[in-house]
Length: 202
Image 1 (cartoon, one colour):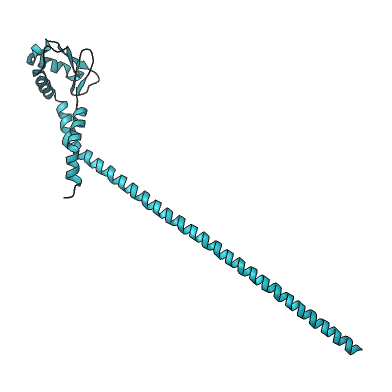
Image 2 (cartoon, rainbow, N blue to C red; image 1 turned 30 degrees about the horizontal axis):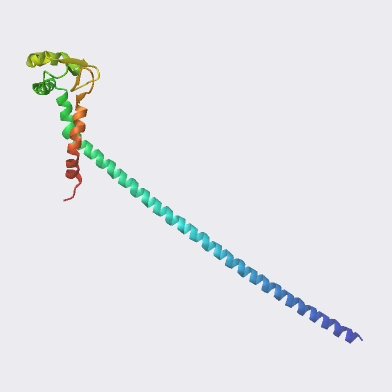
């Protein structure tokens, strides 16, 4: 009786152990499968993150290179413009400024202008800097006396520092002859030649 009971107990134990082992194997297999799927999903996610990071890095690189190129081009253009202005200034601005401060030169220009003056024209005014007015009035009075007596007057101007202006008495229009005006005119004429001399490769 004891042997049968022991045999039955052993059999039940063995069956329980076997079932437990099978259940454990099944759980382990499921766990391994889930783990493999998790690893696969993690690898996929990691690959996506890396791809996005690489794309952003490439875009940042392209943008940075583009910005640097633009900044470089702008810097070169500024330098080029400054060089043109510097050369043009030496060639044009300094001599013109000196000439327009020279009362004798202004006198000669006005005399040349008045040589073609029509006495039948409307009354006109020549406005000169206050600092030069007395000298020019004295010199021009003797040189172009008839013209000044036929409708053209010489007046001092507080707004002029050099050169002169000519305008009808009614103020309908005004022609300026100052260093700034001559600078602007000659700069436009000279600039293409300066650009060619400084930067054209031949």
